[in-house]
Amino acid sequence: MNKKPLAITCGDPAGVGPELITKWLRSHPEEAKGIVPIGPAEWIEQLGINGIVVGANDFSITAGKPTPEGHRLALAAMEAAAQGASEGRFGGVISGPINKKGFSEVGYPFPGQTEFFAARWTGEPVMAFAGGRMTVGLVTWHLPLRSVASAITPAAVRRTILALIDLRKKMGDNHPRIAVCGLNPHAGEGGLLGTEDDDVIRPLIKQLGAEGNNVSGPFPGDTIFHRHLEGEFDAVVAMYHDQGLAPLKTVDFASAANLTLGLPFIRTSPDHGTAYEIAGRDLADAGSFASAIRLAQVLSA
Image 1 (spheres, rainbow, N blue to C red):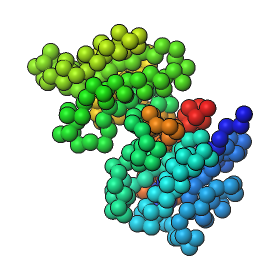
Image 2: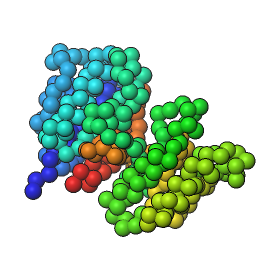
Image 3: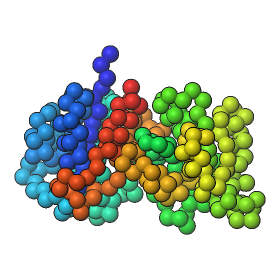
């Protein structure tokens, strides 16, 4: 049975997304047959492969110079990809990087792309990163720190752990070993530095263990990622954005990709932004984009 093609959105047309996608498609001509690029007419024409055009035909793009028109075009590409997957035309979506602040200025109501695809496809998303030396899932992501503690609920922690278990199984682990970070320094130090670790996280881990899952913690966030890198665990659950992504991007910036789990369709993206300062200069590293495409290919099978 032939697999459905994967949609790939251009992201902000003034950023590095289009040039990195172009580089990958031209260096992988056979695999490119299973990819449908979505973006501005001039870019699609230059690619020389079948794609979907969004935006005005006379739209002018200058690398490194974001515009409201570019933000609207990037959003139109995301809408086309999400709708195509919902209609059964795509097996998944790889999305190029966008400018979240710029999107907000043209009426975009979501803090990121994860929330957008969750709204379009309906589901309870989990943000995760994989493809390099580390696999990390986030219980919360686009929240100010002052709001994180109240968002650490048993349901949210459980959803993230189970999503990571499923991901690692699809990546080849028969019985994934999942480590869970504590929320507070030293995982609360027995309640001295916060009660969430003992009141919320630890009981949930015990329950999941009783259900047959190999889950451990909560562990202090300042040591568990080293243990993951040493091979003791297959994945780590972090409680908030920077707790998980600071260590991951330190060692895997050019090789890891962002995944949205828990939705009807797979969605991946590179783990970097628009990089306007180097857009159009052929300086951007394509490693994370390549990882995003590779993961989408594997996980949409």
